[in-house]
Image: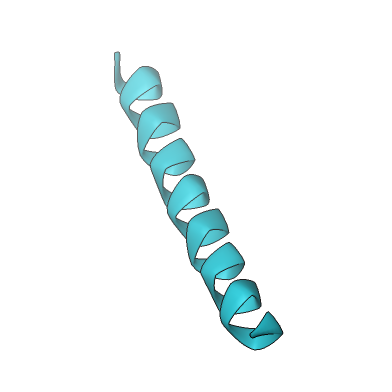
Length: 30
């Protein structure tokens, strides 16, 4: 159960980082 929670939390952080990175790239391309 703890492992599942840790995996879920890491994937959330990874997705959040990926979205922030894409948003930054989009602003740079304007």
